[in-house]
Every structure is written in C-alpha cells, then in structure tokens.
Image 1 (tube, rainbow, N blue to C red):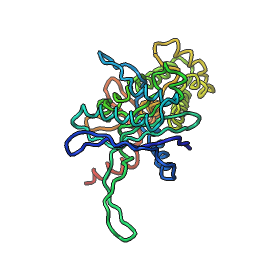
Image 2: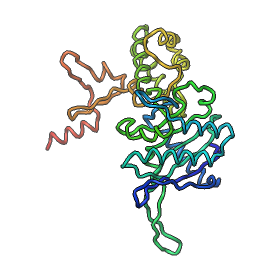
Image 3: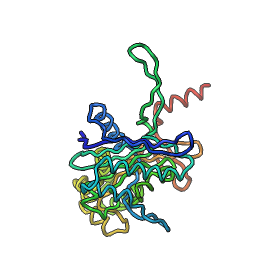
Image 4: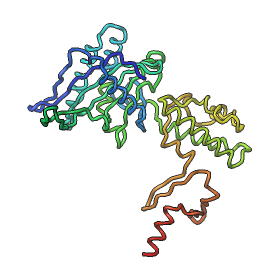
Length: 340
C-alpha cells in the first residue's frame, strides 16, 4: 500500500499558434478513491517496468552545465520554504522551457505525486499523453472524452527522497524509464530535472553474473550444486526486483551459503568486477543464470541451463548444438511438415 501525501496535475500543451504553454492547477488533487487507484496502479506499473535507468542530480558529461533549477525548487519544498503547489508549478514551467527546444514536443499532463511506501518517501514525476475515448451517458448519449494512457508510461521518473536526503552522494536515488532505443527518447525529460545517469544497471548485473560464474568455477561444487547456486542467486534478485528493492552483495552469499559459497562477497571484493555494494537488479540480464537463449539468422534457441551437457550438447569445434529429446510441440510441427 502507498500513502499519498500530495498530488497534482498541470498541463503543458501546444496552442494553435504553435507555442507551448502551461496551464497550472491552483490546488492539489483532492484525495479520493479514484486518485488512490490511479497512483497505486502507476506505482505498480512503474515498479514492474523493466530496464529502468538510475541517476542523480549532477553535471552532464562533456561541456554541459548542471541544471539545478529543479533540484533547488525541490530543496525549497522539502525544507518548507515552498508549498507543493508552487514547487510543482515551477517544475511545469521548467518542463515547458525544455520542451520548447524541440519541434516534435506535443506536451501533455505533468503528474507530480509525493507518497510514502515501505518507510520511504518518493516523488513521482510523469508526463502523460491524453488518449481520446468515447463514453456513453445514462441518457444513452455518446460523448467524446480523454483519459490518461497509463499503458504507455514512457516519460516518468521517481526520486527516492529518503535516499537523496540521507545520502546526497548516491548516484542512484533517481530512477527513470529508458526509451526503447536507449536514453535518447527521454533526454529532454531528464534534462528538465537536471538528472544524469549514475549507475549502469545492465553493466552491474553482467558483472554479477560473471563474478558468480568465475567463483563457482573455483569451488569443488559439482554441476548440479553450481546450478543450485545460480538458481538461488536469481531467485533472490528476482524477489528484490519484484519488491522494488536493490540487490545487496552481502545478502547474496547468504542465499547460497548451504552450498559452500560463503566467501563470495570476499571474492567479488578482491576481483576487478567494480560492483557496487547495492544496485538495482535487471531480470533480463540475470536470466542468463537460469537459461541460455539466442536469436539470429532466423533461428531462436532457448533452454534451461541445467540441460547443457545432457539434453543439449554443444560441440564448440564444429559450432553445433545437439538436442536430445525434441520438445513435443516442436516435434508435432516437424512431423506434420514432413507428412505434407
């Protein structure tokens, strides 16, 4: 459950004359069941969103200058020198100014919501596009209307206010949705907040997978026990991802301590893995611990890791995979094609 403190909507829209303009709401949204459901659903969707980036308020790479206007206004609000409505209005004007740099920008509704979840304070910031729809009244009249398109949550960020204030030097207290082609789609949204990427989630998770593979190779564990270690680490990380938490290196060793891997933390510290003590998990990267998969040249192959060397045999010299026991649904397709 989340506890909503304050929430507000402002509009940044392109007028008929081609100019972007703000329409500011003068007071916060009233607490209601509809607002509770909206923010609960946004929290769920955002937490489950895969491939998020993580950053902090800072200076962009190259010759860029830090945009501290959003951070300064946020600080003023958190210290009580600025009301939430005034702060959100300033944020909307900053967004309008940033959007004006791009001809493609159409604007939308800027939602800002301060809420608490599991003893952490968050500020959720999202630019959402209205989607046309049709409704029917009790008098059976058809009316055109607009609704917020929650399924297409592409321009959204969440600031962990608790982490930001407790550890200003952290580089991951802001999370954001990455565009399908990387960060480029959302650059203007991050720029208006003065956010720069701080922790490369995929790199951290790839390093974790590599460190685990290197470690189990040094142990006396047999093939099944090694896979049990991989499965345990994956299950732990998946639980953290689902709960919106972070992967903690010191906790990982506890997950497979029964398999004799208590020294994993020391192993990673002594190696050249450059792993953070805690970092967000990336399930698509970590899935390599449980599955092998790949696509190319019109062929897709995927199988559970424990089948390697048994049902699936890799001949490295001849560049071939031999599958023993074709899956029934695939076998049926092959047999029907052969008969045809």
